Length: 513
Image (tube, rainbow, N blue to C red; front, side, top):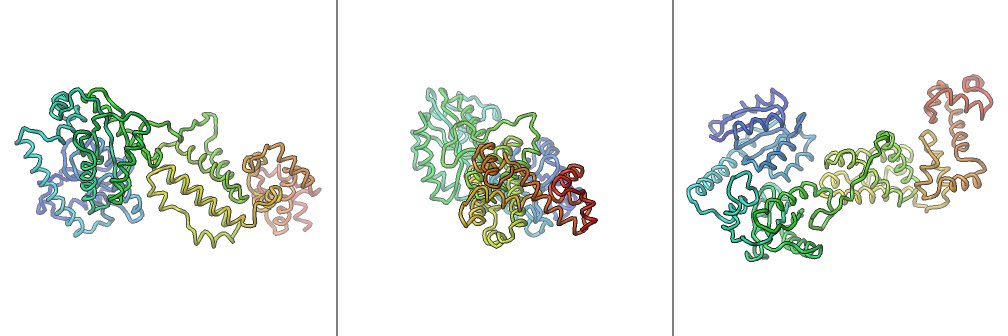
């Protein structure tokens, strides 16, 4: 019987899965259930199931994190994930972990049985192969390479493995590949890629291996410099692109002795795990992290985020395209600094873009037609493998909206600022923020504004707010409501400003009008 572990945070669903079908009749037995990823890992180590059926969203450690941990351990098991309809895009990202399939809840009995039939054949073939390797003492190059690269897990002597591969006395380097966009039913594409790579590099120069989810190359001569790494990446791209696949590739650095190859392997694997933060079309090899920024420990993160989002909104409205891209980069780097996690960064960037677009549409209804015909690149962001691509997507999209809003040309900066005040008088507008957007010194922009408008920026803003307040008061709104409506969070401060410019209190003005 093939042992099965069911993982779901809902007890009814766990038991439902256990009783949904006659597991034993299909050649399976449910040996355990678990409520989350942490518990599942413990049960996996205790029962060694060949199949795990896991929910994708769970508290603590979710399904994707569980699969990632299993792959790090090179666990010998198969995985089917379960997801709700709302998780569909999220579930598709699990494909990169080489899962065996995913099912939408509620689980369709026939679809699950179909998966189980296919997996039983696959697992049977794997067991036959394992038995053959046990029966015959002569180990293949593939097995010897695995023993060389993971000496702690299998206990074999690395010197013996190196000798069996004919590598004694050689320096070497490991290059790891992770193929992308390999969909279910297209596993043959990986086999074809490996075959093409083996044809391209003769055995005298390189040895090939597979350690899911990676494909690897042991180079018998380490790469000498950046030019050599670029040339290798170009060669890999020419071969892999023939199969219509994208890929990440990383080199772990040269080692003087093949018995140290596991160090190069580990270094390459760490780089691939952070490939999302690397640059496109390069062989990852420990380049400086371009996303690294330091957060001032005394800084109020939430307030800083609000200011940056406000600056982005104003940059779009005023057509400051250079500032738009700079702010998008600044926001992304702040997200990376808060939590270096791909999903967290994508989710929050989409949230910021969506919020910004909603505020633009509220203030400028005409832009809705353009946005309806040019929706935000949400799907492209979630499916992207590189943060640098996402930065370009977001910057370009928001720049398009800005150009549409400012199609009449850049015009006079002060006119654009006064128009902005008319739309955003209730926001926390600051001269320094606008100066940064227009790339001016704050004092110089203030002087320009005073010369052209005849009064200081803050005075002009106060007067616009007070005029709006007068309109709201005549509509019967309460004083504290008007204060908040026009951008004053303190009612007493609003009262003082109103008396200064109107000569009477807001209450008296409302009474007389």
